[in-house]
Each structure stands twice: as structure tokens, then as C-alpha cells.
Image (cartoon, rainbow, N blue to C red; front, side, top):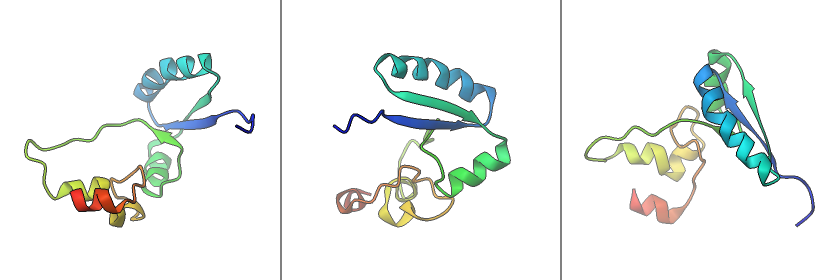
Length: 100
């Protein structure tokens, strides 16, 4: 709406992040999105992720065969601001809280 370009940074720490992010960035550029990849050392990466200091990170959410209480750590409002939680997305929604 404002004409400002859509920009964000993908944070990574190893060669796998480079492999995952590069084609994604190339495709985003085709539609006018200015995405970049920043590779930092693992200690800095862990610190930044634990303190929610990033735009985008790659990863996966390991789940048990019978999802249970761990879902609160991924999705609950209480976990959204807790350093080191798995709620990297910062989801804070009473409806989601009721579901988990």
C-alpha cells in the first residue's frame, strides 16, 4: 500500500540454511520481495533465536506420535515471550490457547 518494498532477513548458521534459503530467496525476488540470508556462528544464532531477534529462521517442529502438553510450548501465549521457548512465531491468541 505504501510502495515500500517488502524486505526481511533469513537468519542461519550453517551450509544447510544456505541450501534451503537460496532457492526461496530467488523465487521471492521474482515477485518483488527483497529477502536476504545472514549466516552467523552457531552461538550467536542460538542466542538470537532464544531472544526472538530475527525475521525468519528455517527449522522444523518435531512432534510425538501422540501430541500432548508440549504443544503449549509451541503455540501458547504464555510461551510467546519466554526466552528459549519453542513458540518462535510469537503466537498470542486466546483461541489457540484454548485449543492447546
